[in-house]
Length: 301
Image (cartoon, rainbow, N blue to C red; front, side, top):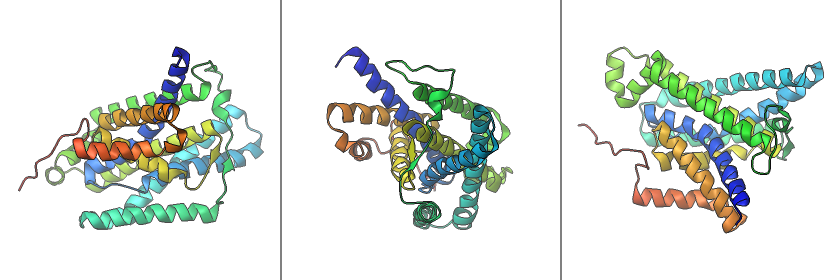
């Protein structure tokens, strides 16, 4: 393997990891606060891509400049997806938040299946063409190692990570999130607005997932109603690998998974692309169930 080819594979894996990270952040933030694996989160990723495609088609009839058209479509699709995240939390999880974890898990799986079939019936079961507008952004140029779409994905992911870190660390709502994550009972006793904070967490996670859906669709050039399921499962594996509930761990796990898939498909076979994620999941559950950066928590009685 030549150095140039190695760098191409590495960049490809880093691109995968960036997308997984945008989805895994939603998983790990929600789990960190209410210990819920939101399996419907992958469908928000898919809905973000479909809503962006529909908005691009509608706005293209207004003869707007291309850059303005894309910016408006992206912003509206993000708001639309955030609304889905809020609605899912409000309807599917809030009423049973204090129920047994199995009830929450069943509700999450049911919501995932509902959203898949809702989009299937509302749209189509076929793959749809998605415009590759990332290649036309003039700030980046294609090279033998890095193309424009990959550069946009890296830049967008890095910016979102920085903004999310600043938000969680320094804002009042971010402090409320950390308080709920550490001890929900004590946080409630000192006046942390639980419902509002959890809703905001779902909204933020939905925004990052929707951005990931739009970015990957604009890179590969097609979307499908089932695209969120596999991507969501892999992002969940990444979150578990890094330490579910740990934001830096979710990012680390995502990049490890992305690089593993990229090098695995190159050196072994592309037929096993989806297998690597589950091999990693099995290994991490056997060797270190708490994840690479996770900590075993002792239950207080």
